[in-house]
Amino acid sequence: MSLKRLTLVCALCLVTFCWVLPTRAQSQTNKPAESTEGDRDQTLKQLLTEVRELRLAIQRAAVSNTRFQMLIERVRVQQAHVDALSRQLENIHSQVADLKAAKPQMEQQIKDAEDLLDRTPDPNAHAELDSRIKGGKANLARFAQEDERLRSRETAVDTELQTAQAKLNELDSQLDALMNELKAP
Image 1 (cartoon, helix red, strand yellow):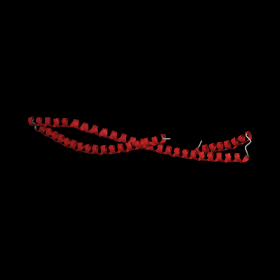
Image 2: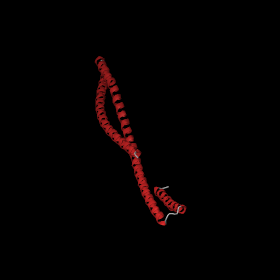
Image 3: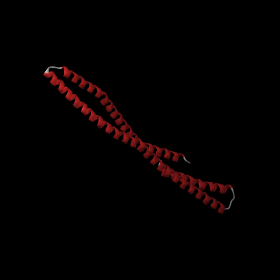
Image 4: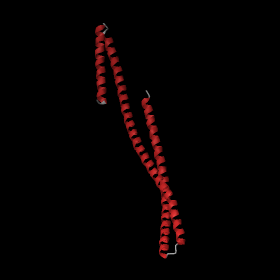
């Protein structure tokens, strides 16, 4: 049932009650008609005031409910954004850790190849080892570039995450304030 119908039904019930009650009271007592008419007018005024107050209360409740629903949706969307950024940051941390773990292995392979190069008299093997060393050093340089890129991306995502988390905290505060407002009499 819509709020307007509910308000209308309440108002009709109150008006009917106002007309029936004074009629019964008049039949039970032998008051003059003027007194009964004044009581009826006073009762109608009180009921009208009550209906207006009820209408305002219902309107305030509807507005608060809409604000509440919108705020909940904003919190939900912001939480999803924070979660996505957190996953992205974890992924970057994992990639940095992988590079960090691979770097000593690559350096050891280059060192081993250089040691073997000094002891290899065969020109073909010497050329192959020299090529492997150059390739390893090129990979090591790419590792350094990738590490720098990941560190830069890590800083950017971390900053974005902090901003998003601050916005989520603000939305949570607004939601708490609205809930306290709704609890207040």
